[in-house]
Length: 157
Image 1 (cartoon, one colour):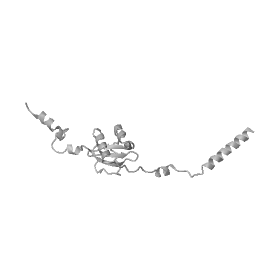
Image 2 (cartoon, one colour; image 1 turned 180 degrees about the vertical axis):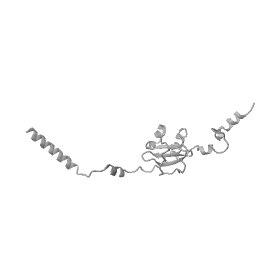
Image 3 (cartoon, one colour; image 1 turned 120 degrees about the vertical axis):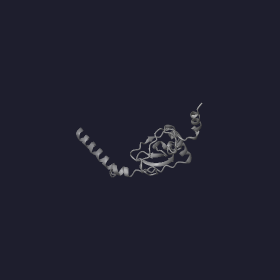
């Protein structure tokens, strides 16, 4: 009798499960293909300045790869390293939590790490290409704020 009841219960559970699950099975590749893309990142001028200010001290500047043009929608070349946004910047701008950045010689790239696509290009506050132009010795810049100090050090007593 117990066996008969157990079998009947098992049959009922199986029937109920299949009756409720009459939706077609979704394949994993269909699921990812149907995922919604993130809306485009819209940054105000103030947000761009905050990003510039926050990343000016990031010591992760990388050389811009040959033939790479920093544009929204472009894939970041594999040779560039993505860095996480600094926590203080994320606290100021929570929308940036889902993004990484790449600091190039002249630009800051805000990148979607899920697909390595550039979502914003922001000019660097102090681009390095200006620092390397002219006749400054290696390791020194043409920063007008430091010219007085340089003149003082070059004076002979």
